Each structure stands twice: as C-alpha cells, then as structure tokens.
Image (cartoon, rainbow, N blue to C red):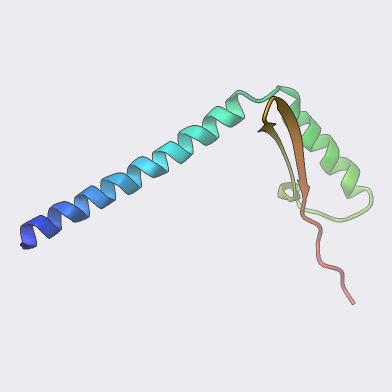
Length: 84
C-alpha cells in the first residue's frame, strides 16, 4: 500500500502545480490584454495622492475588470493608518 500512497502524493503535487500554473497564466493574460494607459494612470494617481498623503508606490493598484458586457476600472488605494 505504501507504493500507492507515494503515487497519490505525486498526483496531488501535480494537480497543485497545474492549478498554480493556471493562476499564473490567467494573471498574465489579464495584464497583457489590458489597455496601455493603465500603468501611466497608476503613476499619475500615485503622484496625485502623494500630494495629500504619504503612501508607498505599491499602495495604488489599478485594474480593468470585466462586469458582464462592461469593463470596470477598479482602483484600490491603501492609505496608512492614522496616528494619534
């Protein structure tokens, strides 16, 4: 029976690797198919936000999300916690 357990572990490892690869490919497709203006928009939003709040470069994320027939611009800004 130990031989079958060894094969089962390999199968689980293979399925995990396959799922990880699927996630990577999906992420690559979403960034590659996105409009050219998204990186520039993200930089400009970061510059604008930095005028008012000190944030890191990775605090602003801009994504294009499909919502049925429509493309939705999803903008996420992680603001620092308030002191005091």
